Length: 155
Image (cartoon, rainbow, N blue to C red):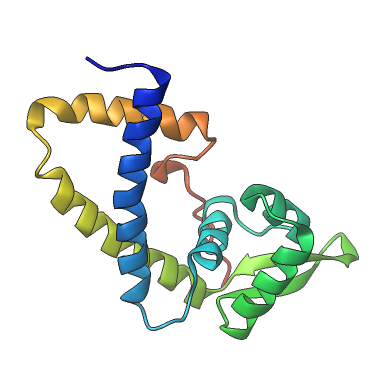
């Protein structure tokens, strides 16, 4: 049984190559020209609800000027909208649009199908260990479980 930090990192890198390939294929299957970073922003908005640009930039680990350009592109595609914050007109909030929600849902459904197909090839006896390990990884990274995603979509 391998369990050194290097072995864990190597296994996660291997799994990440699989997941990045699934992610790229799922995005290429939709009609919108959306990059992986743009889609990640949409997912954060889906998970956490409307965000100030600085909060979204922090969540994505990017500079605020980067989030401004990214949001400009997503606004142009009508996947997010900017609005004045109710409590402070100088503050802007980024919100996922219904079109953006449909995109996140569609891409997620496509990923779910492909990942389910891959999982069927994992031996049954390994699956519980896999679930525990992947949940531990998600928790360590601060990623919420799918069941904890934001459900109050703005229209």
